Image 1 (cartoon, rainbow, N blue to C red):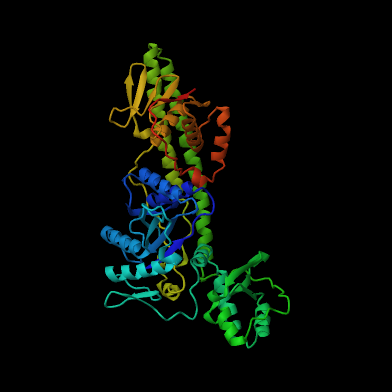
Image 2: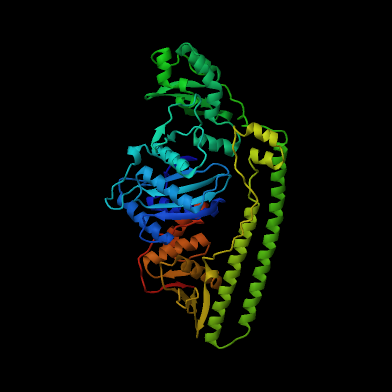
Length: 543
């Protein structure tokens, strides 16, 4: 197993970041991942939104801490599949080693590659004292390594060859004294290589600069040798930095000297070459070549090009098909509306019938939109990583050669058409009551009511109900809607309407809608609505 800590976002409010992280943990499908299991610790409630509200409220108590909720990810090796009970036990060990057992925690087990991994969002604010805890006195990664060693030992998983800790026979932990001569590159560099299939600056420094630094007999020889590579070594604080030129003249990438090799650290060099001496000549940067591929195999470039060409052609065909389906649906719905308008029944019945027909049309649009989105997602897969491509083409000998050097991820063609759980107009039933229509989830308790020229929303806490009411309003009044009620309700409804692409005509809400539409698409289409106090008077959506 391995464990890592994900850095906190530097943008967005504390509340937004907590909601964004916990939403991703509980529902990773937006990122193309599959949720295998989820759970929580330290909450008074069981429902996801309520737990979010608890975590946000406690995090807001720590006014001096911008990010009291920390994101950790322990990951099992390829081929290891923990049971739900083992996941629960692993989370207990993890929190115990970090000293955060009593703290609020939301966790979810995801799978998007060969490796199953668990995301944990842990609130470091103590639920009783309100103090922000620093696990292991701020050295929480050491505690993460200890937790990984304990989980491997107690559950019988294969130990990582370079694991930092080992469990003795008596159950105590022992830190391994041996350190690799060539440090492992950082997680960020590995992610860069996996994404681009090109060598990172850290790997280039290890492959090119390490030998020059190890063979230098003086500081001048070291600086001159690195200058011939277009690199330079400088002292920064109490350590050293190797600057690696980037391709296409894009500047330099600083790499910690300790990431190049053990012999490249400033302490080791000063012990061998004497006190640090800066370079006496300016480094003339040579134009570095294009990034070298991590591995190369004949046929990969042609296969990748054919893959992208086929996807481009398939997308064009799909766009035409989906456009034709949408136009056909609009034509049929227009005909049904015209047919209803020609009947001329008594006025109260007409009002109710129009509402029921509008709800039916809104459901059909939502179903078509979701099906089209899934069809587009099936064509959004990237070309598979090198090792998966080799395995798929039966090139197992070549796969064995690169196995220890590069580990990719599987981007399969799994059909994710799981049973839908609608959270919009499709989740509600219509019940006609004279000239009005109540909409409920089957329990006959109206969440919103269509009374003809307005739609009354009865509970502002029900976000799904608000979404459904807005969809019905947009279907009835495509030219735009206005919002009445409390200022809080109007702002929330306007933001949700902006996410749904529904036009709101209130001039005083224009800045709210503009602000919501300016958000990144991934945030706007996966919102976390702020919690609201219970208010029992109706809010209205009007023409």
